[in-house]
Image (cartoon, rainbow, N blue to C red; front, top):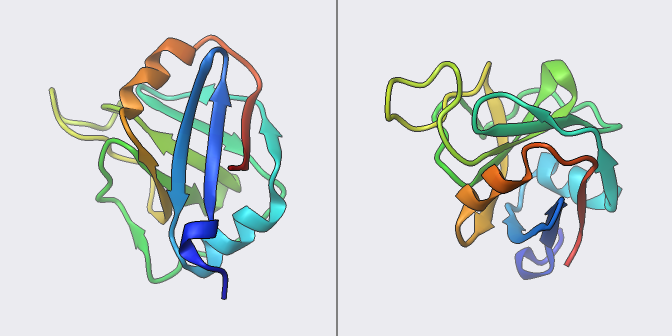
Length: 129
């Protein structure tokens, strides 16, 4: 099992760079082992998602209840999802709602809303910090 403190990552998109901490679960460890990852950044409201070369089924962390700053893995799209504000399924002024259940894999350290400044940039990069 990896040390949780060692599972810190950087998220880069355009001129935005953030740090995040991955959780200590099977899906997060599998994502961490793939790093660095460069993906095509898709935008869905205030959510970025991008396909990665990994398939993991839903696990014990699977939820539709996410917060700004959460990072999830969405099995149907084999995608990492980064939540930084409301999505098209959110109630007005509400928190993000994913398109379907996601395995929670991590959390951004700091202000995730700065990702709004990176909407038009590709690629998005995840790498070990």
